[in-house]
Length: 63
Figure 1 (tube, rainbow, N blue to C red):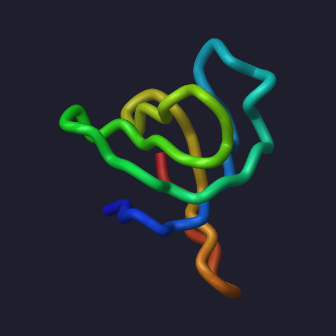
Figure 2 (figure 1 turned 90 degrees about the vertical axis):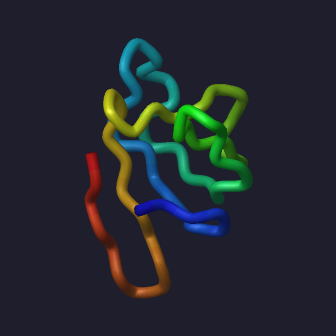
């Protein structure tokens, strides 16, 4: 579903409201499928956090 190099926007990160609205690029996907990238120090947990994947002109909301 996600791949390294995808640009994403964080819509809602559970318990970390100051991350909401940040954008970044996925640099690493760990063994638990958590996403790590350029938006800051915390990993995105796809089962808990709401993000949208931004690729060129296409925007896809995923949660």
